[in-house]
Image (cartoon, rainbow, N blue to C red):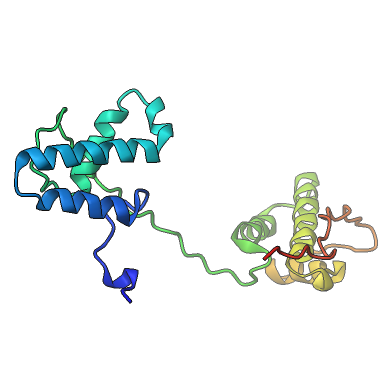
Length: 195
């Protein structure tokens, strides 16, 4: 038994191993006429495999490009159009660097911790109270999403004081949290799969 990991790499997996084997067979044919007839038959099969490509204005050109690409540009035939080398049209983009941030508690995330740092630096007043209300409610929501059992208003107040090093205090006797937005649970019976 031969495993796919032992076989030659698929050039275009969307067409499958059968098409790749047909194209490689066409490459191995001795005369140009035989290769041409075989390539035209492969073109017909490929265009039937992906009928949505027929809606594109240049679908024939694309399929011939795919045939040439699958053969590693070794198929020597008279192509009905000029072949474009796939992968050479646009250079590969540079990988995007992910900013690694040090997060103390994952349930709150970086932006909530950054908001708490800004909150600690704000002067007392109405703007700071409004931001404190937003941050506290978001912290409660985050705790609820992370672990419903860990959601506690006293924990939110303690975390705010800890993050702001005691500069900001949330008075639970006067502050009212907004109700937590819940999503419906899906604890109902699961449907059995048909075998």
